[in-house]
Every structure is written in structure tokens, then in C-alpha cells.
Length: 224
Length: 224
DNA sequence: CTCCATTTGTTGAAAATTCAACATACATTT
DNA sequence: AAATGTATGTTGAATTTTCAACAAATGGAG
Image (cartoon, rainbow over all chains, first blue to last red; front, side, top):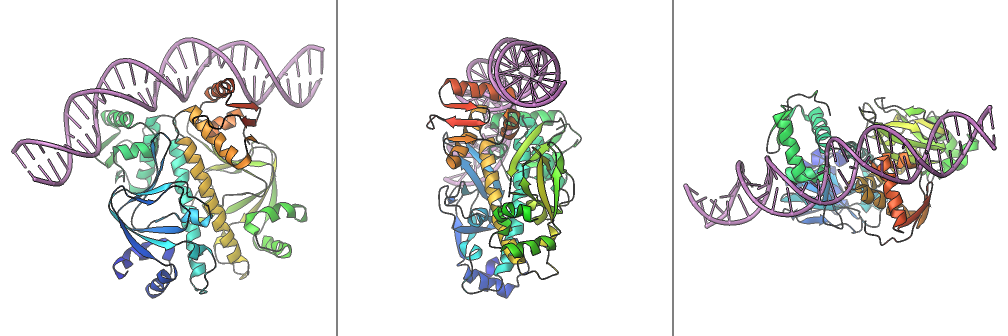
């Protein structure tokens, strides 16, 4: 566990928790560390919502695959970020999405019900964790809002620019995105080839430059 | 306040709170009741996130209007439901959406920071409310997931059917939706005329019947 | 370095959406 | 009952997306 202490300290779930207490809490939560290879399922749609995951290394994606096999990427999480917490907190029977390893990764799984339900050990950090969880889940809500802002746009160009401008707002006009072209298309909910064409067009128009996943916005005034 | 006790008792924010304590808490939260007419703004995009609203009567909508005036309805809330809580809990500077009265309505506004920040009165129900808030915010998260399931579909028909099947799952095959045609289009993020055309087509195909906002699904096996 | 597999870019045809304009239905008021 | 305003349905043209197929580029492995 010690090996992961730095990542865990970054995790907002343990904000304002001292290192020694952290280890005690992990025991209380039945924490276990697991490794997953790229494309492996971590949590599968339909499973009961019992565990909360903490990404220790690598990247995991929240994905939904419909009846026809169309993949849709809802969100992407990297080191120190949580997944599955909303399903546990809302006490759903079956989780409505899957969590997949986007690359080789390590995750810590904890028994979510030990957080949400009363802790029999009367663990004094229980309420601190609930408070932290509230902030985390609320922040996810904002992420969903951003995602809806994107998908509410009607054209591929508008969706792409809305996403890129969101990123530029946080990271500055040069930034790296966590998606390759196919993944970006699955996140923006558009056709990959159409997306590639649109990126080329924006490049020709001098709105942006990009090299793989690294984008630079040149004229942020460009009409979205 | 007494007049609204029934609605407030329904509100999950006050779950496991006795009536007498409820009144005390409302004082602690600086609760005020306000009336809004149809189409009036309750909270406007860009405002600081300070208040949590509880719908007492009528319907409010979470909307986003883009640069070109295209309206997008993110969600709709009725009596006893909360709005604005995620923005307060996530401590954002400016709220990213607006809250509008979809019809004449009454709402209770409470000072959200009094919930999220330490209560100086050491109010003993503070932690109970935080716990309730966690469940509410997590449940909203699931709603967003449903919304994304809808908007991730590519065609108007698929978006509509996804929404109707979601409703049928909860309410049974006959149900009333909280949207007129234009609002439904703004919620599904599609063109209104195209939506009308698709509804007519589904009607002709014998997949559903509808009268205004009341829908009945006839063949739920219909391919989405 | 070459080969192979994967990713990204390009293109044209088919399908679907959007847009605008109008027709019809519905509800309310005068 | 007529008139008015709003909501809903219909249609065709223009735009955009999707789909499929292929070309080009990239990145590792041997």
C-alpha cells in the first residue's frame, strides 16, 4: 500500500486525512489492489453497484456500448480519480455503464457500502469521507454538464470546438487530450471519419494545429 | 412554512428529520419562499453558486441557451425536488446553466453554503443533511447518465425511443411526459419538426399512440 | 530496415437532420 | 361563434452526418 501513498494522498476522497489514518481506513474499507490490461473490463454494465474504484495508474473509461455495438465514451479517469462512486451512493441495483481499462492500469477497489452505510467500527473518519464524497460526486455532476454542453451541439464541428475550448479554458491553448481519434469520436458522439475530416478542415482554416493527441488552438475567437 | 410541510416532508434533503426539527433547520438555512411566473429566470447562468432551490409547486427546468439562441433543456424538476445543489457542493464560481420556471411555480431558496460549510450553530442535523445531499447528488448523476444515453444515439427516432422506453420502464407503458413538443425536442437535442414527423411515423407504424403529452407504447419490442 | 498492425486521413454515395414555410389543430378570449 | 395566438404536423430543399472502402501515415517487433 505504501507504494501508492502518493497517489492516494492526491485522491480527494482522503482529503484532510493523515497518512496513518489513511492506512487504517483502507483496512476498514476492505481495500484491494488489482491490475488490468488494456481493454479489460473492470466493472461490467448490469453488475450490482458495490465497489468504488480509485485509479492508481493508467487510464480507465466509463463506456456504454449499445445494441448495435456503437461505443460511447462517457468519461475518462486517470490517477487518483474515482469511479463507480455515484452508483454506490445512489444505491442502484445494477450499474448502467461499464468501466474499461483504456490502457494497462492499477486500481484500488473499496467496498463502497462501508462508506455509505453506517460503519460498524464507528470509524471517526466516516463523516469526513462522506463529506469528501459529496464534493467528488458534485464535481462529477459538473463534468456531466460539460459533456451535455458538447453533445447538445448539432454539428461535428461545433461539438469538437466546444470540447477543445473547454479544454483550453482549463489547460491553456496548448493541451493534450486523453483520446485518440476513434475515442474522441466516441466521446463526442460523432463519426470518426467525419471527425478526421473536420479536424483537417480546421487545420487548413488556421484555427488549430495538432499532432496526434496534442492540440493547439490558434484563433480562439473562431465561431463555435 | 406550515403550508408547505407536506412537500418538504417529501423532499429527500429532509429524510429522517422530524417536523419540529425541520422548521428549526429552515431557520438555520435562511430559507425564503419565492414565486415565479412562467418563463421567469430563477437562477441565471454566470451567477455565483450560493443557493439551493427546492421546488414547492409547479415545474422548473435546467436550461442552457447557446450563442445562437438554441435552447437545450438539461432536466426538469417538480415538487419536492432540488436544483442548484451540485453547483454549491462543488463550490463553483459561476453556475453553467440557468434555472427557468417552466410554469408558474413556488420555490424555497436556502443558503447552500450553510449546508456545505460548517454550521456555526453546530446544528445536530447538519451531517444528516450532508448524507442526504450525497444521495440526491448521486441520483442526479444517474439522471445525467440517462440523458447521455439519449443524446448518444444518432437519429431522432433512436433518441425519442430511448427516452420513451426509459419512461416506460419507470412509469409503465402509458405515461405523461413533462414536455410539449418543442420542449421535448430541446431535451432530446433534435429539430422539432423532425421530431413531430418521427412521432407521426411511429404512430402510423403502430409503435405508439399519443395525445398531447400522454404517450402509450404499444410494441415495446420495437427496435430502438 | 522491413514488415505488420494499428491509427488516421480522404472520398463519394446514401441516409438523416435541419431549416423554412406553411397548414392544421387546439385553446382562450372577446 | 368568431377571432386570435400558440402548438403541432407536413413538406421539400439544403446541409450534414454516416457509412464503406481505401489510402496514407505511424509505431513496434523481429
